[in-house]
Length: 177
Image (cartoon, rainbow, N blue to C red; front, side, top):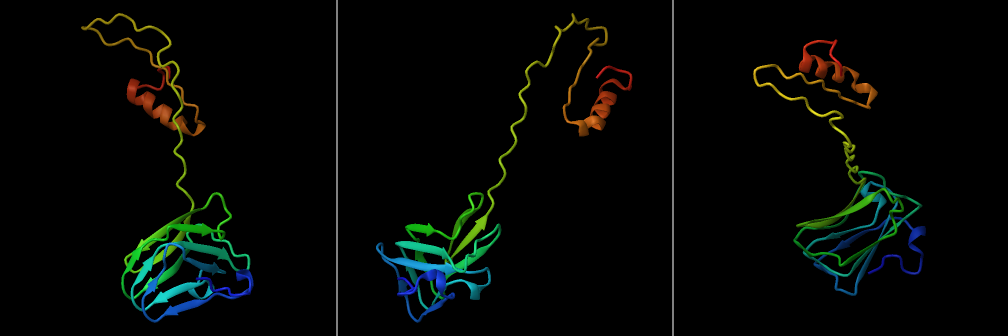
């Protein structure tokens, strides 16, 4: 099903398609919808009075050069009955931002498209090359440990943490850290 007719989709306004009964889209069908903004009146969507059975392709394109941003969501189909199936394929020419991911949300009574920035990649902790630069001295079980500990923190904002850790370990700001 295409709602553009002979006119290119990019040159017309958004449509609200009301289906009075059930909506069934087979494997060879295409539902072509355009988006010109985030308000419901600014993008094509389908309202079904009965049930909706989905398959085939959903093709989403831009109207008036609109592009989604993080957090934008578009309800493309809503039914007063039950939605069954999913679109086998979504052709998304709406999103041209490689840093924006589309999430297809299939609810019991409809379908929405949500655009989000992916979660940031966690930073990999730096590799510890050499924890102890000198061999440990012999230990006398009846004496305190004569260890000298060196801690290197490359983050300049961690200076207070270095002092607090030194004081906790050695009880003095004169110990070598």
